[in-house]
Image 1 (cartoon, rainbow, N blue to C red):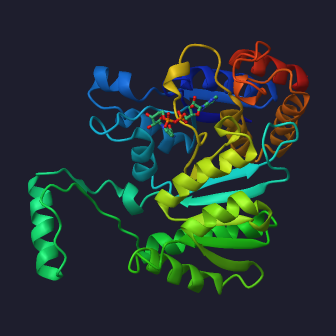
Image 2: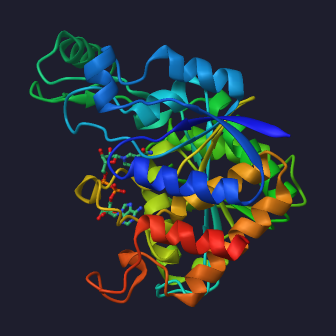
Image 3: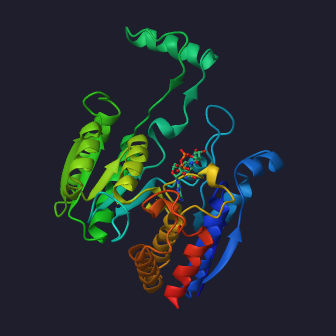
Length: 359
Ligand code: NAD
C-alpha cells in the first residue's frame, strides 16, 4: 500500500533534515506518495500568506503530514505557522516522547517520559492586544469595571483561556495514550495555586477525568516543582499532561534530559488528522550547512510509521537510529563530546549511515 503524505520541508535547517528523513523513511521499504507543500517566510513573500489554503487542503485530503520546522518572526510579522496549523486543523494534542537512547551524550539514563501538551488554548490562543491599541484600552476599562485591579496604560495584554472542553479532551487523550501504551501513571501539571480559574479549572477537570481511568495512577504537580523534580528524579514520571505554554517549556526540558533537541520527536494529533514534527525550531544559524541533527524529525517519522500501522518498519527504523547513536561515529556535532569535533557527521551522512543499517 502506498501512503499519501503531505510533506512540508519548512525553512532554516528544515529542508535538509526533511530530505534526510524522506530518504530513511523510503529505505524502510514502505511506499510513500509525497505531496510537497511549502509554507513559511518565503511563501509569505510570494503568496501573501505564510500558510496558504493549499497546505491545509492537502493535509485535510491526506490526513497525515510530516514537517520540518518553520521560523516565526519575533515580536512582529506573521503569526507562527506552526501554531496556525495546529489551530486550523484542531490538532489538539501534542505528544512528545522523551526517551533515552544508549550512547546519547546526557547526564541521565533510562528516561522514558511522554509529554502530552494541549495544543490549542492557553496563552498560545493568539488573543493578544498591542500596547496603546484600542483593544488594550477596552480591556483595561473592562477590568477596572469588574475588579479593583488597575492595569498600567502602557501594558501589552495576552489572554489565557483554558476551557472544560479543551481540558477534558486533552486529559482523556493522555489517559487513553497511557492505557494503549502500557503506561502506569499520568501527572497533570499546573499553577492552580495562582491562576485559580484557568489552571484551577485544568486541575479540577483532570481530577474528574482521572476517575474514569481507575487502572492508571493519577497525580498532579505545580509547574515550578515539576521542573525541579524532572531534573532531580525524572525516573518517577511517566505521562505528563500540561496546558499549552507549560507543555512547550517542559518539552525542551525533556529534550535536555535525553541528549538535546536533536533527539526529541513529536506528533500533533486531532480528530482525523496527524502532523509529525520535531520539538526543535529552524536553527537558522545552521541553515544550508548540512550540519543539523536530522534524528528528531526521523524519530517523528517513526511515530508516523506507527500511526500508519507500519509497525515493522517503525521498529526497524528506530532500531537503526538507536544503533547509529550507540555506535557514536555517524552522529552530528551536537551529539559529539565537543561542538567542534572534527569527526562530526553531516546531516546527509547520518541518513546514509541509517540507510546502510536498514539494508
Ligand atoms: P531552535 O530549536 O531552532 O534552536 C535552539 C538551539 O538548539 C540552537 O542552539 C540550535 O542550534 C539547536 N538545535 C535545534 N535543532 C537542532 C538540530 N536539529 N540539530 C542540532 N542542533 C539543533 O530554537 P530557536 O532558536 O528558539 O528558534 C528558531 C526558530 O524556530 C524561531 O523562529 C522559532 O519560532 C522557530 N520554532 C519553530 C518550531 C516549529 O517549527 N515547530 C518550534 C520551535 C521554534
